[in-house]
Amino acid sequence: MAQPEIICLGEALIDILPTVYGSSIVATGEMKMAAGGAPANVAVGLARLGTRSGFIGRVGDDFFGYHLKEILEANGVDTSHLIMDPLIHTGLAFVSWNEIGDANYLFYRQPSADTMLQPEDIDLAYLAGAKVLQFGSLLLATEPSASATFHALQVAAKAGLLLSYDLNLRLSNWPHEEAALSAVNKPLGFANIIKLNRHELGFLTGETDPEVGTARLWQDHFRLVVITMDKSGCFYRTANSHGFVPSRPVRAVDTVGAGDGFMAGVLDGLRRANFSFDDTSVQMACRQAVAVGALTVSKPGGIPAMPYRQEVDAFGI
Image 1 (spheres, rainbow, N blue to C red):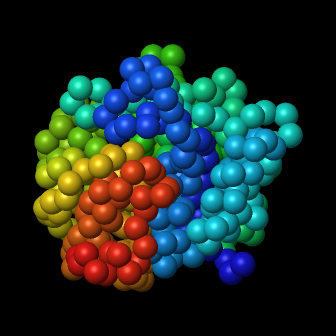
Image 2 (tube, one colour):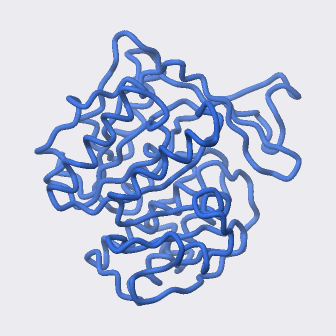
Image 3 (cartoon, rainbow, N blue to C red):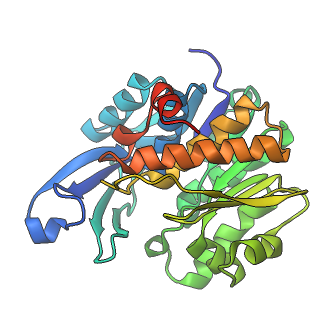
């Protein structure tokens, strides 16, 4: 398989979901499974949009792990650096929805294979051939995966890659908020592209207004900060401009994976603009991201809902 342009680092998990969107496993007593994990979702989203993607991480040498490997490969994601851990099982994430439609996650990762990613699992040559390393914060809550993540960031930064950070905050994985805040702030010293939702922006800066919060967050090495704003759209800030891109109205069927689809849309859009961060290129990438996010919520599941290039083109950006 050809060298990936964008490599996604992190967790590939099995999502356990209610059979009916908006309900809970406890209420219905029924469940279904789906391949998931934010970096895995982004990798598939990128591949379906036409960007060569790869995945670095660990899954268990079990039927869940092989299912994840097969799903990634079937969607064109390079899995040459996906490790099948013989000792630790694949992680599970149980999903339910609250009364206002927000997804809640209960992780079974104490430990799971993704948390056992080692610094020596990071291949310098593999990273150096890419243009972007995409990562999140979940692996920062555990060792050795936190050390492996920071090793990858250091290697990728030295190799000249753009580092793209989707915070994807899951506070239930941390002993307390102070520990989470300290850990999730550290990658901002490396990241060039940052994607947050308004809650995460408030968590980092104490300010949920996107214009004020992104100005407070901004560092000189940043190239783009994007704030997703649920049904409203998104706000973006670059070194020289900022603006708002409105949402695309659709009937929401399942919000799982919406942010991951959005992230894939941004990165694929920037790749098509040769990673130019001028206002026109960033607006186009954000418009595509909003379209991909809308298409993702219009179908059930995370990876199954990631739209293909032809769907996005037909939907329009």
